Length: 613
Image (cartoon, rainbow, N blue to C red):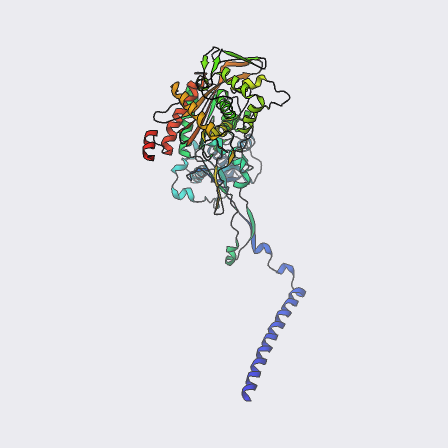
């Protein structure tokens, strides 16, 4: 009985204590609501502050992980020009202004006018540079320190050290200017292109002010690359620091190109442009089996780190679509004969040994068409027509097809249509249909050898892939994969049609291989079986017509012919050294193939066949 009484008193005691504690809490709540002023409480502004989790724009890399577009820490530099009424202060801000002008190469006339005027108006903070590199800022701070120490402050006595000369410690640390009274520097990210002009025609660029992608991959995938800054209320309580959100960084994009091969091809193209006196050009290297672009060179190019420079004005502003000649349309000339012959062979209207008597001219739709040398070539077959690049013969071949069949084949090859290559600014070109209101039958004859139509090099690469790849046409692509938040997406190979049969593709490849060998073409590479065709197109000048003194020279080819692993397209515009594709574009093809076979590890045919056996 006594034990029960003891336990009851314990339970009662605990209940009383809990009740008193609850009453105290309620009383405190009532007291606060009735007696405490709001000003006596800790305000939210005293508990934390708004902060931003800055995002990073996604990287652009080559297929081997080499960075082509990255991000660099730069600084907004402000100088305080307030309270300089005393003589010493006037000299001080004058010295700071002169240092800023010289170190940051200030050319903005409004800012320059302010910094150079005397006396300056009462102004607290002026931004003297919004994108100061780490090297420039360090030099500026060193000179400022020398000034305050009474040392030399002549900017011409020192130079900004190259970025690669900075120590590892200096290159990774964030510069802090908080201990300086008149100078502040705020770090932020801006786009950088470590390889400067390399593949710039593919990459495009990002505007520094708006952070918007322009041209190329940067524009096409702007929303994919662009990260989102996250704003959050940061409590000063150290125990809650882990509540800060992670920045929403942009996705990384891996290209199909190889930076080393791209550099080799650009070097070949640049040297050719200079040697031949041409104004521009492009070279595309594609794997015809899966559509991957291994290299896409275009000249002229810009250093996209300095897209605002006057020397790059026409390129950057893309006047006449010159930023990337690989996706610019033009009249290609005789390379189109490959597709005309493919259509005729596939339709069964000609065979390789079909005879044709070339009389030097042919009339189609009331227009007389002549050969490139305006001569008659006599008895020919279809292979020699390709070898000798006879306009008359190919115009006749097109008449055997007739307009409906010819243009249906050209449509199936994708001429005059966007290829869907993942680049901003691709031109669709222009190929009329036989039912167009302004179509005339004479165009059947001229279009057969690439005159009177406009197509892009990337369209030709896509179309000719059907011939190189046993009748299967693949979509060209320059995106290898997209990596976002640890996940990788790799787009699959895309087959976009079978415009010709495998038998037609094999037959035409043999014809073009034989024609190169018979003419001892400058495109041939010893030890490798190659097929291809030159193109020379007179450039139409409004009011004057076609003038042979200005031409577009081209070449398309692939190999090894039994197992094509590369397809190369060359376009050199307006060369002055020669007007012929056989003399200008064909040697470029050879030089490119010599690099490609080494880079891809493709041994000569004899060695390859032995290894296969």
